[in-house]
Image 1: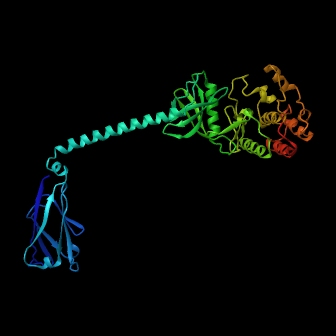
Image 2: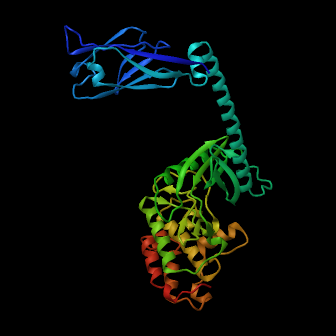
Image 3: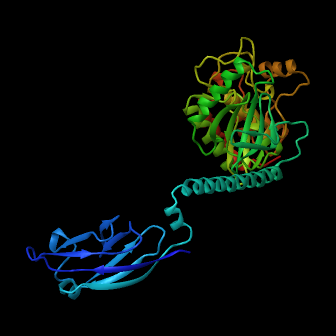
Amino acid sequence: MKTWWLALLVTLAAAAQSPEEVELMVHTRPEGAEICWGRKRFVSDFKSGEPIRLAYGPEGPLYRQVTQYPLTVRKAGFRELKAVVTAEQLRGAQPVLIELGELEAVNLSGWLQLHPWVSPCAGLALALTAAGLYSRGREKRYRLQLQRLRALERPRGEDTNIGRSLGRYHVVELLGVGGMARVYRAVLVHDPEQQVALKLLSLRAGLNREARLRYHAEVRIQARLRHLNLALLYEPFELEGELGLVMELLRGRNLRQGFPVLTAQLLDQISSGMSYLHEQKIIHRDLKPENLFLTDSGILKIMDLGISVQAGQERLTTEGAVLGTLAYMSPEQIQGQPLGFASDQYSLGIILYEWLVGELPFQDETPRGLAMQHLQVDPVPPSYLKSNLSPELDLVLLRMLAKQPGQRYPSLLEALADLRSKLPAVEHP
């Protein structure tokens, strides 16, 4: 390590012409150092032997009431050297010699200062080393992340989506299969603790323009819905030939997996969610036990607005096509007629009938026979099948299941309020 000796010769004399100013002479090596007087830098890149004039008052760094001044010599690559100059020294006539000791070079930086051509090479080497370390670290983090994602996956069977990464989501488990979509549990690739439900509609499976229109209609409808009893849509996406919806992941079970006891609280939640939909002028069109989900915390969620429509909107189906689940369809839906909110009331009436009685009001082995029962056959009053159900409750359900929409309740809210008043005598079958 190369060291330098610094000898600082300070010559201070009051100028005869101007007593308000003194002259400072500094001798030091190496040249190019920076002088700091007090807390102010007043000289930089000076040459040895050059006079430095210091003035008293606002024009300079000297003040008559100050008794001493710190003096610091700085140069890149060397340790700082410090001294103190007193007011007595400034007033003295004789030169004051101050020994500051060694100006010691620090590691390689001083050598680099003396050899500027080395600095770019060293900088490039450091940059390449840092890039290599970052790349290896990123690769290691990626492998660990991939291991975490793989550990979350369930056996895929024949489902090729499990194990895929779609955008920022990684598919780990199949949750359910519907007529037009599959629902998966997925996690964020960069944060596997964050889980979502991923509803995928495969374009490769033969989805046409009509299916695309239904998808975009569902996105438009769900994007503006915010209600406790409706499944929340996070975002839509289209990637690698897939149309999808990213939704909140629910823990619990749907009613098809088991009907709980029908309580006033559950009925109020259905009423609240459906009333909100109808207030937004939305007809669900596919109410069934699979689309009513009871979370582990007791919140009932209305799901799957895939074929829902805005009231008064032109149907997004081809002429003669019927969408929905036949066992829960209203007569007007089966006939392909324009639908109103009364259609949802009929479908919910079927669900409530099954919920309370334990079986559907209309059953047949063929789709045609089942459709004809919806159109022509009156359901058996629930109290005939379950003795614990009251005739008053029969009147509510049978009115909800009237063949003509005009014969049903004016609103679903009114129908469920009437049913709620009959619930104290109702028990789970």
